[in-house]
Each structure stands twice: as structure tokens, then as C-alpha cells.
Length: 315
Image 1 (tube, rainbow, N blue to C red):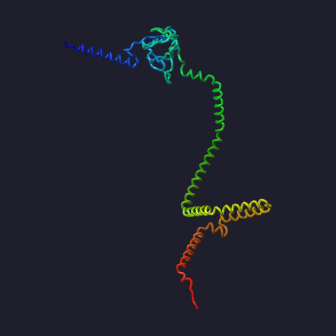
Image 2 (cartoon, rainbow, N blue to C red):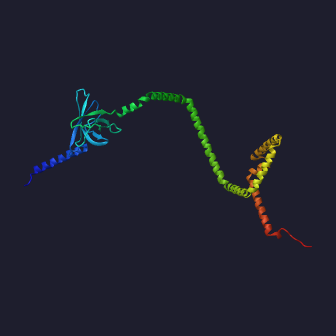
Image 3 (tube, rainbow, N blue to C red):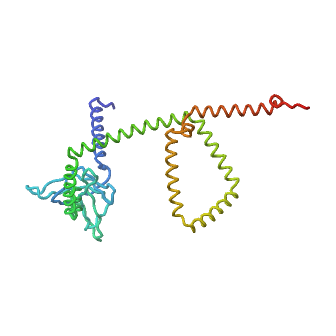
């Protein structure tokens, strides 16, 4: 027996509609193949609960709100119908509570299981409770600290006013002047750093010689540590002897000597006198170095060719 085309189209349409209905209910969280029982709860404020909101027990989604309807024309009370699995037993003192399911304020329902030994029947009405909004809960938490917050706000306002007085035109000018001085100092430090880099680069050989001399001096001191200990002991004995002597006049002379020495060092550092010229004149240093090298070469030549300089005659 062949099916007519209209019959085939009808069967396909019915199957399509059934799949669509099942898919929509599946997306809504409804189980079309499982048996469910209906329960009710009455609220004065549903707090934004929707007919598609989920029902939770101990954090697990077990059902869904199916319908919300107001009881009286003034909308002072609402009755909420929700579905739960048929194998679930609810103690008679269980509470259906509307709560915030996330931080965005979405509402859901949860059933707090009671401890009664009697159980509710399908179609019964549960005890109800609506959890306050997150803002109201925060308000309750902050209520004991309201006075403190007011004092803090007043103090903050006083601080702002003081800051306004501090940041007047004269203070701003002083601040800009200080910043300009800091900028000038920074530029001077940058120039000084560049000059130091140039000095280190040009005098690298001399610095290396100084370091080698210091290293040799350190090795010498290390090798003669015993003698140094004896010297220190002798100095300690001398110090004890000096401490027992009258040092007033000696210290006064020493102060005068130090002042004279300081004046002499200042003249030397400024390049005055023969010693100052000797220290500050690079040409004199170079000539002296060359003379030393020539003298070293002369001594070496005398050692290699003594007959060239010393003539011995026998009478």
C-alpha cells in the first residue's frame, strides 16, 4: 500500500513539530519524558523571578518555575507554580526561597529542605521567603558604619579644601620653579657624567698603572704582616706614652702646621710654585718620563758596552 504525498508531508510535519517542541522544552530545562509533580508558593514580592527561572536544592538544579500569577488586583500577593521530580519527597516545613543566583541580580528559586517527618503532597503550597537584593543586603551590612562613613566623607571634604588652598597660584609658581631647578641639576649631572667618561677614557692607562701599584702594595703589606703587627704594637706603646704626656702645646703647634700644610696644598692644587707646576704640568711629567727612559737606556748601554765609556790605561 503506497502512501499519498499529502500523508507523507503530514507525517514529516508532525515529526518536525514534535522535535521542535521537544527541543524548545529541552533548552528551557524541562524533561518531557520524566514525571514531575507541581508545587506552589505565595510571595508578596517575587523580586524579579521569571516563569523560566530554575529551582535548586542544595545547589543542584532539580526543576523550573512554570507559571507566576498575581492573586489580588492590587498585586500584593503572587502565586508561583513550579515543577519538581516525582520521586522527590519534601518535608512539610520546607521553604521555597527566591534568591540572587549570580552577581548580576538574576533571580532563581531554591527549596530549603526541612526536618519534619511528614511530607508534602503534589499540589501543596510551601512556606515562602524572598531574599533581599544585593544592594539591600550591602546596605544592611553597612548600616552600623553609616556614622563612620559620614565622618570619613566630611574629613575627605576638609582634605580636598586644604589641597585647594595649598595649590594656589603662588604654590604652583614655586612648584614650577623647583621643577626647573631639578631639571637644571639633572642636565648638570648629565654633563658631569659625560666629562667623567671622557676623563676615564683618556686616562685609562694611568688608572691601570695606579691599580697595579695598589695591588702590588697590597701584596707587599700581606707579605710583611708580621712586621706591620710589630709596628702597630710599637705605635700603640708610643700612643700610650704620648697620652700620658702634656699635649696642649703640641696640638696647638700641630694645628698651625696643618693650616700651613693646607695652604701649601691649596697653592699646589692651583698650580702655583714649582711643586704645583710639577704636579699640574703634563709636559713636565712627559719630559721627566722621557728623561727616565733615556737614563734607563744609557745605563743599559753602559752595561752592554762598558769599554765605550770607561778607558783603562796601564803605565
